[in-house]
Image (cartoon, rainbow, N blue to C red; front, side, top):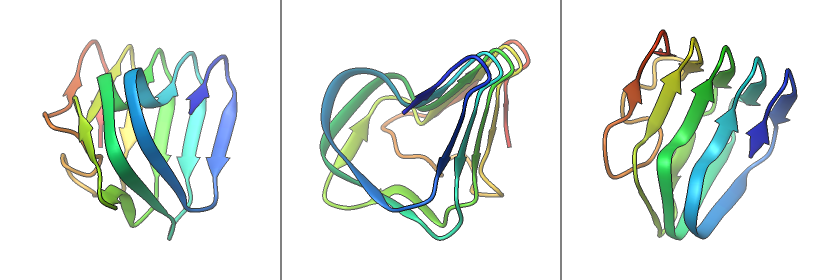
Length: 117
């Protein structure tokens, strides 16, 4: 899922992520774009998904906002790589979901004004 240059993606239904390697991120938002996860949906992971930067990445003033109850932790799979990455004033909002809200095998990070809320 990628949103760039002020684009908006609003995810309103359940979906599954399966078997991916060499991915930069699963959800990537940059240059003022926004990705919104609606409340009550579930994202499940099957197989092994490998991300290099993070499962969720917000850069250059972009946002990822999730109201969803469950992201990526249901299903039979796993995510290898960081949970999130935010930089350049990018914001990832999990509605109080905490540092382990997004799936991943390592902690997420922020840099250069990036925020994880």
